[in-house]
Amino acid sequence: MAQLKLPLLLLMVLSISCIIGMVEPSFARRSRNRAYLEASCRSTRYPALCVQCLLGYVNKTGLQNPQQLAQLALSVSLYKALHTRAYLLKVAKELKKIKAKEYQMVQDCTEQINSGIVQLSQSIEELRRLNQEEAFSDQSFWHRSNVETWVSAALTDATTCVDQFPVRNMSKLKATIKGKVLNMVQVTSNALALFHRYAAKYGAVKP
Image (cartoon, rainbow, N blue to C red):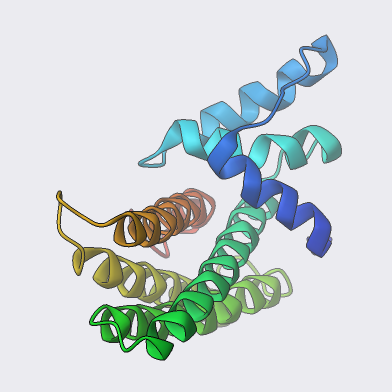
């Protein structure tokens, strides 16, 4: 099975679409792609976001393959994490200059997102290795277990960052940070669900 490789520019477009949405052409030839994606995204916690993030690429490629869809979702999640880290690093640098009390919280979040980036990168590579294994081999089970463990860890790291922020009465800066990280949490949660959907037929992981 061919490996899915996403150009940086395409990932950027997909990532932006997770937040602001995309203009979706209504061509009849794309209805089947959307139907497949919507059916797949029903297994996720945030199905509307799932479709919004992935539809652009699915329409371009016509992919209707659970493994490639999981690979795509993980790639988008990784890009979201990289984008979020870049924003946090910029904010932390500014806060450190003025010795703001929020600096340590932002620094902690940056470390958690860094950890998630490592986990997501490992997961993507592991899923690629999985394609080279027999479906029910011990090595296949091991690869799938690694992906689940690492994506779950990335999700936990990002959620820990979000939990540091209050539910209400936040400054504009805190609200912006929380929103960006929460978007990453939701996208990563969806990626994990799509991976579960792909792997469930082998009985290796359970949602």
